[in-house]
Amino acid sequence: MSKDEDNKADNSFKILTIGESQVGKTSILRRYVDNKYIKHHLSTIGIDYRTKMVKVLDKEVKLKIWDTAGQERYHHITSQMYKGAHGVMLVFDVTDDNTFEKIKDWMEDINSNISKNEISIILIGNKCDLVEERVIDEERAKNLASELDIKYYETSALNGKGIEEAFEGLVKLILKKNKIIPESRTISLVSAKPEDVIEKNGKKKGCC
Image (cartoon, rainbow, N blue to C red; front, side):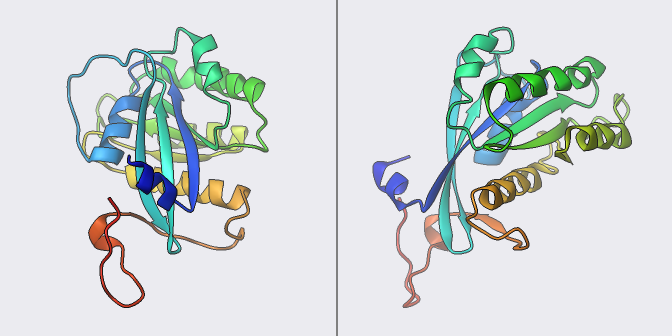
């Protein structure tokens, strides 16, 4: 993203994707940012960093999304990434019971690194398109989310189901926590593309 685009943003939020290896964190990120799905890709080494502009109540918001895939065995590296984070997407694979059972461990990791008052967290059950292979049903996942006092979303990076809704839900929580919008206000997020940005006189203005 260019410096001009960075300056254009009214607000900038750092979001982390966290969870066990192979739950689909990288695929979720690519689906959301590029609307692409790559069936076979190498595991992320280090930290992958992507950005996306969305428009919220006539304000342009820059999302800085950090993919921590590949860092699951190096928690000391991942821990450094919590600094300055506004939101966390806590991801498990609905076809893998172990990734679900590890969610509480990841939640403890989050709580040991940053105050819950400073960050917004959602739980994501990914790969919901794999109906026959599914071992974690929605009720069980929602019960865990309720226990952890966070919201739950189901997604499929393969077909895009629930991806936009999950990010929108997380951004809403961040905006409310940072008192940018009131608790009762509902919002809709749209990608901030050049053709979508309109000046008051009705003429288009470039954003890139």
